[in-house]
Image (cartoon, rainbow, N blue to C red; front, top):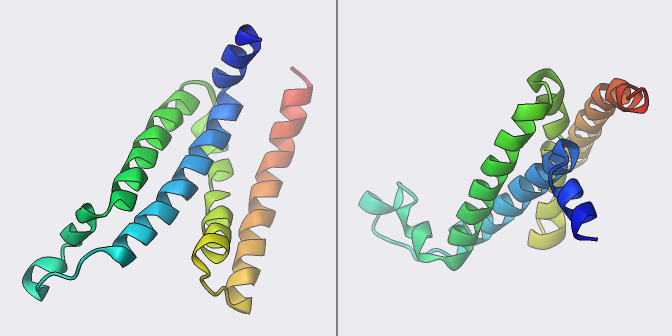
Length: 135
C-alpha cells in the first residue's frame, strides 16, 4: 500500500493534476482573504498589503508554494509543450470554484469562454492519452 501511494505521488501526471488543484485552491483562498482584509488608508491599501492580515491569504500562499513545487516536478518529466496547455484547465476550475464556493456570477459569455478553454484542453489531451496508451 505504501509503495502504491509513493508511485502515485511520484507520477508526473498526478503531480500535474495536484498542481492545478493547488492553484485553484490558492485562488479561492486569496480571494476570500482579500475580501475580508481590513480596510487601511488609501495611501497604503492600494498595495494589497492589508490582505496579509487574513489567515485565508496565508493559506492561499501555502497552496501557491505547493503548486510551485508540484509544477517543478512536472517539468522534470513532461514536456512543457504538453504540460502547460494541460495546466490551462485551471482557467475552467477557478471560475467554477468561484461560482461554487464564493457565489460569484458567471455570465453566459464567460460560460462560453470556459467551454472553449475546456475544448482546447481536450484537444491537447487527446494525443497525450494516445501516447500514454502506447507506452
